[in-house]
Image (cartoon, rainbow, N blue to C red; front, side, top):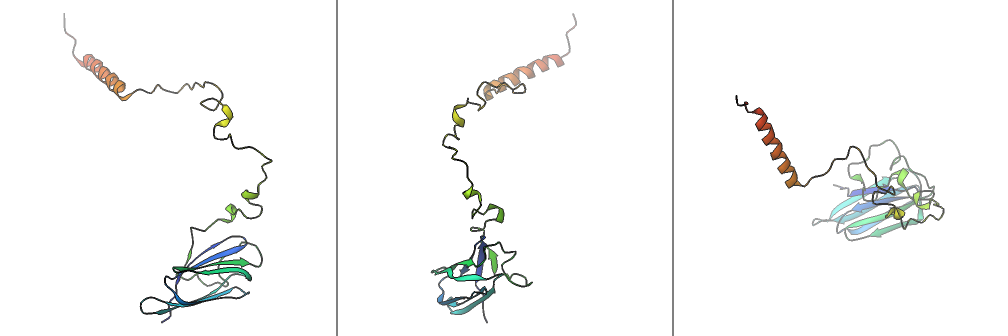
Length: 183
């Protein structure tokens, strides 16, 4: 019986990250072709079970620029796309994603948050100096430059003062509720 290792994936505009999670893999064989077919096979476990994997990726990849690192706990691949664009899905065709393929949330970046070309990291801020941003450039304690009085602010009392005031109020309410002595 052929087993499938767990695979995690994440994407950037110009690359796809694939991590095959298979600790202590023996004789790992990884193959990648320009059409985007990724194959993997290895044995692992006490019984030397065979693990195989074939993924038909959504689009073409640059085999020469892609990198594969075979480690003790996993096989990590950075697959460079031929055409830098976001893919609508990981696989070709209309098949459902296999249960052993999961999103790698540690590497995941949304398309809007990608810091690739033209992203927030490349934003020209015109030489603005943010070194004094934390102290608001010498503005007052309340960052408005002066005292600011807010009409709905209440005086904050210490817990002991509040307890004394509550006791006085209860005592005055008790006096009011007593019947008045007749003279």
